[in-house]
Image (cartoon, rainbow, N blue to C red):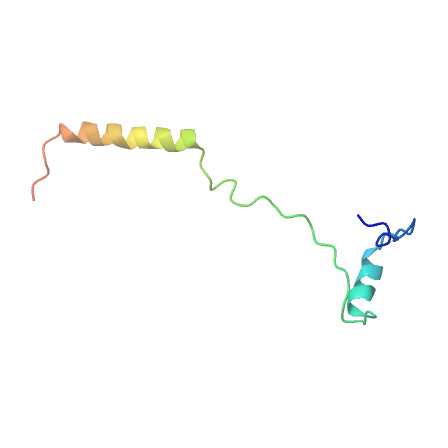
Length: 76
């Protein structure tokens, strides 16, 4: 990089959230506040099936269908 474009030894100080907000949006009024939210809960853990659960269920349905294939058809 060209030496005249670099600033010598000048580093910006780290900003906290309030200072960054003030720099971007001006002074903070009472309608803006920082809210701490609880961590998100894991969603759908009980609803999601594993691949093994799906395979076992499919095999059970196929076995039930094969067992019904040998039985006589119900009267229409």
